Length: 99
Image 1 (cartoon, rainbow, N blue to C red):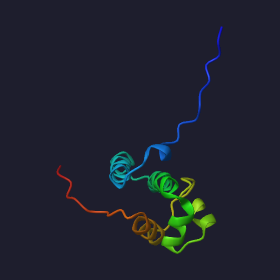
Image 2 (image 1 turned 120 degrees about the vertical axis):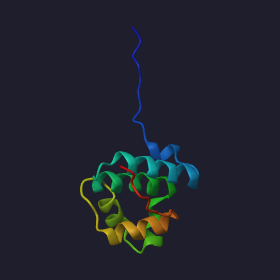
Image 3 (image 1 turned 135 degrees about the vertical axis):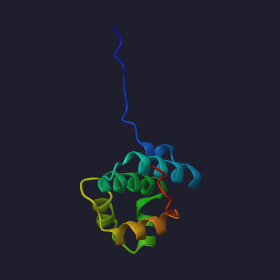
Image 4 (image 1 turned 45 degrees about the vertical axis):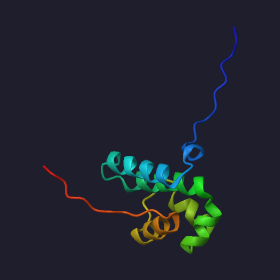
């Protein structure tokens, strides 16, 4: 019997273009159901795809604090989210919800 070898799936390895990154974040926003830590984790995935060191530099944060903020273990401040979104080159927008 042969053993099946598996590897851990890392979405960051598949986020290659700004369009893919934006689509991933949009999908996560739709699925988050108000979970800010889930959105922070999604932003962390995108930041890893772009390179954490560069994103941290562009956001004006230390690399360590960026990892902590986007780990998904806690909800970072909205100020941090805005800095990261700006550093990632992603634009947030609002849309009315139709009931």
